[in-house]
Amino acid sequence: MHKPSYSSYLLILLALFIAVAAWAGIAPLDRHDWMLENVLVVAGLVVLFLGYRVLPLSRLSYTLIFIFLCLHVVGSHYTYALVPYDDWFRNLFGTGFNELVGWDRNNYDRVVHFSYGLLLAYPIREMVLRVAEVKGFWGYFLPLDVTMSTSMLYELIEWGTAVIFGGGLGVAFLGAQGDPWDAQKDMALATLGALISMCITASLNAWLQRDFGREWVESVRIRDHRPLGDFELMRLWRQRRRATAAKSQKEPD
Image (tube, rainbow, N blue to C red; front, side, top):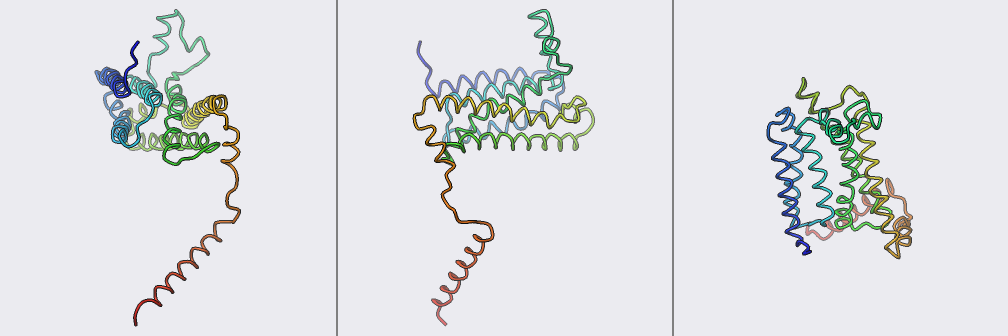
């Protein structure tokens, strides 16, 4: 079977996402919530399009991003707290998924937050490796760290948006379902997903990469034993004063 070219594969992903997004945009449960939920999606797509020529990602990374975005737009169609995954599961298997696993709330939002870390940590790692040229430990820690920080940032955006709009729209967008620890649980799940993703990536690299251990050790080796902080500030200050003095001596009276 003929394997599609890189550009053809991306066009297929784009066409599929447009189809899913078009479905999600037809008669959503709450039109205003749907619009709010997809502001960041539009911004993310713009960044992907603008960055395609400068920093094209692998097929794997684009596929993971595609899956996450599809999960998100499905949530935006129903609002996250009302995605009827339990009804879908009951229609297929005769019993509700929540009943099967012991959940007492609609956890679609939790699944998507977990998927944020699980699916997007690898694309983040690919960008970090190619832009910052980090290796070893930092190639796995920084994607985890970025996932954690952006998850926290999203929760702040979610909270601020809910406060600004208030009412039913704010409640629908926040999707806490009465859980006072909803934001903390969402961030924890995103972190867990990213940790699993990086552990899988590290395990594969340890198996395939002969110098994996040496690179990991080298990445945490201390290269400069001099203290920074106030010592570095004083060094820069003295350097600036010398440069200023040398410049003043060269200037004619």
